[in-house]
Amino acid sequence: MTEDRREQILILLYSYCQLGMTLQRFYQKWDVTREDMALICSCSVQTVNGWFSTSRRCYPPTPGHLRHLAIMDFLLEDFETIPRELLDRLCLKEERMVN
Image 1 (cartoon, rainbow, N blue to C red):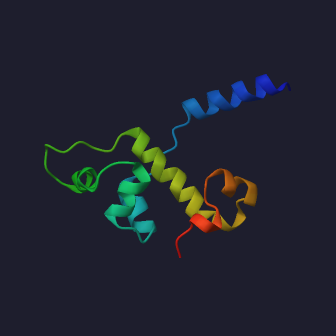
Image 2 (image 1 turned 90 degrees about the horizontal axis):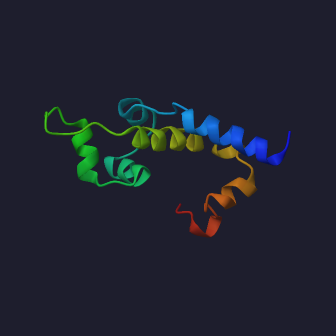
């Protein structure tokens, strides 16, 4: 398989991937705050609070937000098995990590 063909297959797989994790499942699985969820999803804490609100005025999370949660779930779940080179590419170098 050529490199171009491999890249096209990966792009298509990623584009049509239904990767997502519900807010409730992520929140129950991991000991995170709503502030953490806002950081993960690149949004405000007010937006996250709205997701948990029962008000009709609040919007549900987008598929993009749910994808962020699913990717973070993968990273948290499999952190020890992720190759060092990949961690470096994700900008998780030790000097940047907070204890």
